Image (cartoon, rainbow, N blue to C red; front, side, top):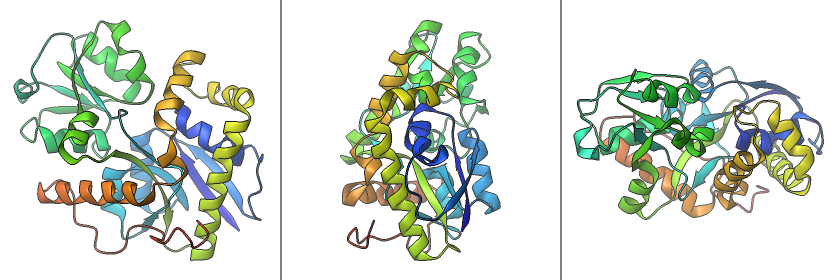
Amino acid sequence: MKLTLGFSPCPNDTFIFHGIANRKVDTEGLDFEIFMADVEDLNRTAFEGKASVLKLSFHAYAHVSADYLILDSGGAIGRGNGPLLVSKREIKLEDIDNLLIAIPGIYTTANLLLSIFRPMAINRKVYLFSDIPDAVSDGEAEAGIIIHETRFTYRAKGLIQIADLGLLWEGMTGLPVPLGAIAIHRGIPENVAVSVNRIIRRSIEYAKNNISETYEYIKQYSQETSDDVIRKHIALYVNNYTEGMGQEGREAVKDMFRRAADAGVIPVPGQEIFLSPDIKKGL
Protein backbone atom coordinates (compact mmCIF):
# COMPACT_ATOMS: atom_id res chain seq x y z
CA MET A 1 0.00 0.00 0.00
CA LYS A 2 1.36 3.43 -0.96
CA LEU A 3 0.97 6.32 1.49
CA THR A 4 2.02 9.93 1.10
CA LEU A 5 4.02 11.20 4.08
CA GLY A 6 4.64 14.90 4.61
CA PHE A 7 6.84 16.60 7.18
CA SER A 8 8.91 19.76 7.55
CA PRO A 9 12.64 20.10 6.79
CA CYS A 10 13.28 21.10 10.42
CA PRO A 11 15.80 18.95 12.32
CA ASN A 12 13.32 17.26 14.65
CA ASP A 13 11.19 16.07 11.73
CA THR A 14 14.07 14.91 9.55
CA PHE A 15 15.53 13.17 12.61
CA ILE A 16 12.25 11.34 13.19
CA PHE A 17 11.62 10.35 9.58
CA HIS A 18 15.14 9.67 8.30
CA GLY A 19 14.73 5.94 8.86
CA ILE A 20 11.52 5.87 6.82
CA ALA A 21 12.54 8.31 4.09
CA ASN A 22 15.79 6.47 3.41
CA ARG A 23 14.40 2.97 3.85
CA LYS A 24 16.53 2.19 6.87
CA VAL A 25 13.75 0.51 8.85
CA ASP A 26 11.14 -2.15 8.26
CA THR A 27 8.05 -0.42 6.85
CA GLU A 28 5.90 -3.56 7.12
CA GLY A 29 5.16 -3.64 3.40
CA LEU A 30 4.03 0.01 3.23
CA ASP A 31 5.49 2.28 0.56
CA PHE A 32 5.89 5.90 1.65
CA GLU A 33 5.98 8.73 -0.88
CA ILE A 34 7.80 11.54 0.92
CA PHE A 35 7.24 15.27 0.55
CA MET A 36 8.58 18.14 2.63
CA ALA A 37 7.10 21.59 3.19
CA ASP A 38 7.06 24.47 5.65
CA VAL A 39 4.74 23.95 8.61
CA GLU A 40 2.07 26.33 7.32
CA ASP A 41 2.16 24.71 3.88
CA LEU A 42 1.68 21.34 5.59
CA ASN A 43 -1.26 22.80 7.50
CA ARG A 44 -2.87 23.92 4.26
CA THR A 45 -2.20 20.52 2.70
CA ALA A 46 -4.17 19.00 5.56
CA PHE A 47 -7.09 21.31 4.73
CA GLU A 48 -7.16 19.76 1.26
CA GLY A 49 -7.38 16.29 2.83
CA LYS A 50 -5.14 14.72 0.21
CA ALA A 51 -2.17 13.54 2.29
CA SER A 52 -2.22 10.09 3.87
CA VAL A 53 0.05 10.98 6.80
CA LEU A 54 1.54 14.35 7.67
CA LYS A 55 2.96 16.61 10.33
CA LEU A 56 0.72 19.57 11.13
CA SER A 57 0.21 22.11 13.87
CA PHE A 58 -2.28 21.19 16.57
CA HIS A 59 -4.03 24.48 15.76
CA ALA A 60 -4.56 23.30 12.18
CA TYR A 61 -5.60 19.84 13.33
CA ALA A 62 -8.61 21.27 15.15
CA HIS A 63 -9.92 22.45 11.77
CA VAL A 64 -9.40 19.09 10.00
CA SER A 65 -10.29 16.65 12.77
CA ALA A 66 -13.18 15.28 10.68
CA ASP A 67 -10.61 13.98 8.17
CA TYR A 68 -7.62 13.00 10.31
CA LEU A 69 -6.68 11.13 13.49
CA ILE A 70 -3.70 11.97 15.70
CA LEU A 71 -1.05 9.27 15.95
CA ASP A 72 0.61 8.50 19.26
CA SER A 73 4.18 8.82 17.98
CA GLY A 74 6.21 11.43 16.12
CA GLY A 75 4.56 14.59 17.39
CA ALA A 76 6.04 17.66 19.06
CA ILE A 77 4.85 18.03 22.64
CA GLY A 78 7.04 19.06 25.53
CA ARG A 79 8.12 21.39 28.27
CA GLY A 80 10.39 24.38 27.81
CA ASN A 81 10.14 24.23 24.01
CA GLY A 82 7.29 26.57 23.20
CA PRO A 83 7.30 29.55 20.81
CA LEU A 84 9.10 32.71 21.90
CA LEU A 85 7.82 36.26 21.41
CA VAL A 86 10.77 38.53 20.60
CA SER A 87 11.51 42.15 19.78
CA LYS A 88 14.41 44.57 19.39
CA ARG A 89 13.45 46.41 22.57
CA GLU A 90 12.12 45.69 26.03
CA ILE A 91 8.33 45.45 25.90
CA LYS A 92 5.91 44.08 28.46
CA LEU A 93 3.61 41.37 27.18
CA GLU A 94 0.56 43.42 28.10
CA ASP A 95 1.81 46.26 25.88
CA ILE A 96 1.98 44.34 22.59
CA ASP A 97 -1.69 44.61 21.55
CA ASN A 98 -1.13 47.52 19.17
CA LEU A 99 2.14 46.27 17.68
CA LEU A 100 2.62 44.63 14.29
CA ILE A 101 3.57 41.05 15.14
CA ALA A 102 5.23 38.66 12.71
CA ILE A 103 3.78 35.15 12.96
CA PRO A 104 4.87 31.89 11.27
CA GLY A 105 1.38 31.09 9.96
CA ILE A 106 -2.30 31.59 10.69
CA TYR A 107 -2.83 27.95 11.64
CA THR A 108 0.38 27.44 13.63
CA THR A 109 0.11 26.59 17.31
CA ALA A 110 2.33 29.63 17.92
CA ASN A 111 -0.47 31.84 16.60
CA LEU A 112 -3.05 29.93 18.64
CA LEU A 113 -1.06 30.50 21.84
CA LEU A 114 -0.80 34.20 21.06
CA SER A 115 -4.58 34.29 20.63
CA ILE A 116 -5.06 32.63 24.01
CA PHE A 117 -2.73 34.94 25.91
CA ARG A 118 -3.19 38.20 23.97
CA PRO A 119 -6.49 37.96 22.07
CA MET A 120 -6.49 41.72 21.39
CA ALA A 121 -3.11 41.58 19.61
CA ILE A 122 -4.73 41.23 16.20
CA ASN A 123 -2.24 43.19 14.06
CA ARG A 124 -0.38 40.16 12.74
CA LYS A 125 1.51 39.46 9.52
CA VAL A 126 2.51 36.03 8.23
CA TYR A 127 6.14 35.30 7.38
CA LEU A 128 8.08 32.14 6.64
CA PHE A 129 9.31 31.14 10.11
CA SER A 130 12.97 31.53 9.16
CA ASP A 131 12.38 35.12 7.95
CA ILE A 132 10.84 36.37 11.20
CA PRO A 133 14.08 37.30 13.02
CA ASP A 134 15.18 39.44 10.07
CA ALA A 135 11.72 41.01 9.77
CA VAL A 136 11.87 42.11 13.40
CA SER A 137 15.52 43.10 13.28
CA ASP A 138 14.95 45.19 10.13
CA GLY A 139 11.91 46.91 11.62
CA GLU A 140 9.31 45.41 9.26
CA ALA A 141 7.54 44.07 12.36
CA GLU A 142 7.73 45.34 15.92
CA ALA A 143 7.66 41.88 17.46
CA GLY A 144 7.67 38.32 16.22
CA ILE A 145 6.96 34.75 17.27
CA ILE A 146 9.89 32.44 16.61
CA ILE A 147 9.87 28.66 16.34
CA HIS A 148 12.13 25.82 15.17
CA GLU A 149 15.83 26.64 14.64
CA THR A 150 15.34 30.40 15.07
CA ARG A 151 14.70 29.73 18.74
CA PHE A 152 18.44 29.15 19.09
CA THR A 153 19.77 31.95 16.86
CA TYR A 154 17.58 35.03 17.44
CA ARG A 155 19.99 36.69 19.86
CA ALA A 156 22.57 36.96 17.07
CA LYS A 157 20.09 39.30 15.34
CA GLY A 158 20.07 41.63 18.35
CA LEU A 159 16.64 40.45 19.50
CA ILE A 160 15.42 39.90 23.04
CA GLN A 161 12.71 37.70 24.48
CA ILE A 162 9.46 39.35 25.51
CA ALA A 163 7.68 36.16 26.57
CA ASP A 164 7.94 32.40 26.36
CA LEU A 165 4.48 31.34 25.25
CA GLY A 166 5.21 27.72 26.09
CA LEU A 167 6.13 28.53 29.68
CA LEU A 168 3.01 30.69 29.98
CA TRP A 169 1.00 27.67 28.86
CA GLU A 170 2.75 25.36 31.32
CA GLY A 171 2.23 27.84 34.16
CA MET A 172 -1.46 28.15 33.38
CA THR A 173 -2.20 24.45 32.90
CA GLY A 174 0.61 22.46 34.50
CA LEU A 175 0.71 20.47 31.24
CA PRO A 176 3.27 20.17 28.43
CA VAL A 177 2.63 22.36 25.39
CA PRO A 178 1.29 20.57 22.29
CA LEU A 179 2.94 22.03 19.19
CA GLY A 180 2.70 19.61 16.28
CA ALA A 181 0.98 16.31 15.59
CA ILE A 182 1.45 13.46 13.18
CA ALA A 183 -1.98 12.80 11.73
CA ILE A 184 -3.29 10.03 9.51
CA HIS A 185 -6.29 10.21 7.22
CA ARG A 186 -9.43 8.61 8.63
CA GLY A 187 -9.96 6.77 5.35
CA ILE A 188 -6.93 4.57 6.01
CA PRO A 189 -7.76 1.25 7.72
CA GLU A 190 -7.06 1.14 11.45
CA ASN A 191 -4.62 -1.78 11.16
CA VAL A 192 -2.56 0.23 8.66
CA ALA A 193 -2.69 3.29 10.91
CA VAL A 194 -1.39 1.21 13.81
CA SER A 195 1.42 -0.05 11.58
CA VAL A 196 2.34 3.51 10.60
CA ASN A 197 2.53 4.51 14.24
CA ARG A 198 4.78 1.52 14.97
CA ILE A 199 7.01 2.34 11.96
CA ILE A 200 7.45 5.95 13.11
CA ARG A 201 8.53 4.76 16.53
CA ARG A 202 10.96 2.37 14.85
CA SER A 203 12.36 5.23 12.76
CA ILE A 204 12.92 7.34 15.89
CA GLU A 205 14.82 4.47 17.50
CA TYR A 206 16.95 4.08 14.36
CA ALA A 207 17.88 7.78 14.41
CA LYS A 208 18.91 7.59 18.06
CA ASN A 209 21.17 4.64 17.32
CA ASN A 210 22.70 6.18 14.16
CA ILE A 211 23.31 9.82 15.08
CA SER A 212 26.14 10.68 12.66
CA GLU A 213 24.35 9.27 9.65
CA THR A 214 21.09 10.94 10.68
CA TYR A 215 22.80 14.34 11.11
CA GLU A 216 24.08 14.16 7.52
CA TYR A 217 20.49 13.75 6.34
CA ILE A 218 19.29 16.56 8.60
CA LYS A 219 21.91 19.00 7.26
CA GLN A 220 20.63 18.55 3.71
CA TYR A 221 17.44 20.39 4.67
CA SER A 222 17.98 22.39 7.86
CA GLN A 223 18.06 26.20 7.88
CA GLU A 224 20.97 25.91 10.31
CA THR A 225 23.74 23.38 9.68
CA SER A 226 25.72 23.90 12.89
CA ASP A 227 26.04 20.64 14.81
CA ASP A 228 25.47 22.56 18.03
CA VAL A 229 22.19 24.10 16.84
CA ILE A 230 20.99 20.78 15.43
CA ARG A 231 21.88 18.95 18.64
CA LYS A 232 20.06 21.53 20.79
CA HIS A 233 17.06 21.47 18.47
CA ILE A 234 16.71 17.70 18.63
CA ALA A 235 17.29 17.59 22.38
CA LEU A 236 14.47 20.10 22.87
CA TYR A 237 11.87 18.76 20.44
CA VAL A 238 12.52 15.00 20.35
CA ASN A 239 11.63 13.65 23.79
CA ASN A 240 9.58 11.02 25.57
CA TYR A 241 6.35 12.52 24.20
CA THR A 242 7.71 12.03 20.68
CA GLU A 243 7.95 8.29 21.09
CA GLY A 244 4.48 8.21 22.62
CA MET A 245 2.40 11.12 23.83
CA GLY A 246 0.78 9.02 26.54
CA GLN A 247 -2.06 10.06 28.79
CA GLU A 248 -0.48 13.38 29.80
CA GLY A 249 0.14 14.35 26.20
CA ARG A 250 -3.45 13.56 25.24
CA GLU A 251 -4.73 15.56 28.22
CA ALA A 252 -2.60 18.51 27.13
CA VAL A 253 -4.07 18.37 23.62
CA LYS A 254 -7.64 18.16 24.88
CA ASP A 255 -7.04 21.00 27.31
CA MET A 256 -5.60 23.21 24.57
CA PHE A 257 -8.56 22.50 22.31
CA ARG A 258 -11.02 23.24 25.11
CA ARG A 259 -9.40 26.57 25.97
CA ALA A 260 -9.01 27.60 22.34
CA ALA A 261 -12.61 26.66 21.55
CA ASP A 262 -13.85 28.61 24.57
CA ALA A 263 -11.91 31.60 23.23
CA GLY A 264 -13.49 31.20 19.82
CA VAL A 265 -10.17 30.44 18.13
CA ILE A 266 -11.01 26.93 16.86
CA PRO A 267 -14.07 24.76 16.27
CA VAL A 268 -14.75 22.02 18.80
CA PRO A 269 -13.60 18.63 17.41
CA GLY A 270 -16.76 16.57 17.16
CA GLN A 271 -15.42 13.04 17.48
CA GLU A 272 -12.58 10.92 18.82
CA ILE A 273 -9.35 12.63 17.75
CA PHE A 274 -6.73 10.02 18.69
CA LEU A 275 -5.99 6.85 16.76
CA SER A 276 -6.58 4.88 19.92
CA PRO A 277 -6.51 5.86 23.59
CA ASP A 278 -5.60 2.26 24.35
CA ILE A 279 -1.82 2.02 23.97
CA LYS A 280 -2.06 -1.77 24.29
CA LYS A 281 -3.53 -2.07 20.78
CA GLY A 282 -0.12 -2.40 19.17
CA LEU A 283 0.78 1.29 19.22
